[in-house]
Image 1 (cartoon, one colour):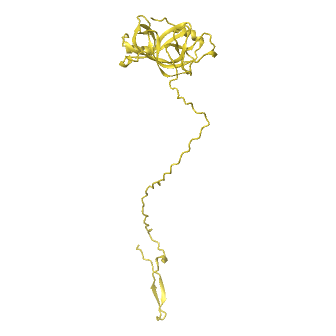
Image 2 (cartoon, rainbow, N blue to C red):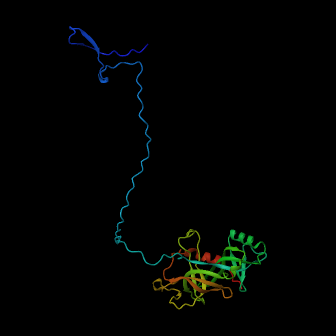
Length: 302
């Protein structure tokens, strides 16, 4: 169908001098007054233009002027002591010895010893220690080895029970080991035992200990030669002395050299200043003391 144009409205008016004749005049009305015409297809409305959205940047904050910080108020708690914390406050007896290792024919596979200063000192080691010793020696134990050991010397009122060394590790000697051989770090209580010629350092077991309730132990007494002029003196042990009358006990931490000819350690220098404060220790059980002492008893080798 052809689209018909809309009809224009007609207005009849009278012209003067036409004897009442009427004349039709087409009047075009403004668009707002024209009647709406239904169309077969809806008018297309143009879409609004697409405007690209840009990310808004946050506003820049102005830096605030620095203000003075108020000093902290004094705490009501007690201030910590000015003394620095002790990083090496424990019992210890450990050092290096470069010496040939021997093993007697027909003896047990655990009966090793080393020779130093013309004397023979037994070596005590666990299964891994013995395996390491054999591997490092490569079948020839007569060659000098660098031994990491700690002394197991036990002295009681009855005398010396044993003079042994516990093997911790071993390796082939190096050039720098010549100056290291015989150097020990000893940390213990300086005492003078009755019927023993020289003072000793009592090496206790450090607490807490994982095997405190399983295995008994004996206090190791390492004989030392130490001449000091700065005040500390060895604590003299007397049989039957009450504990209330005990004098000051000095805890010594120093570097010592082992003299195998005399079987003692000579003081070189202090690692830490002497103190009367003692590290925590494990107290031995007296019920098993005699049994443990019998196990450690061994004849001295000359």
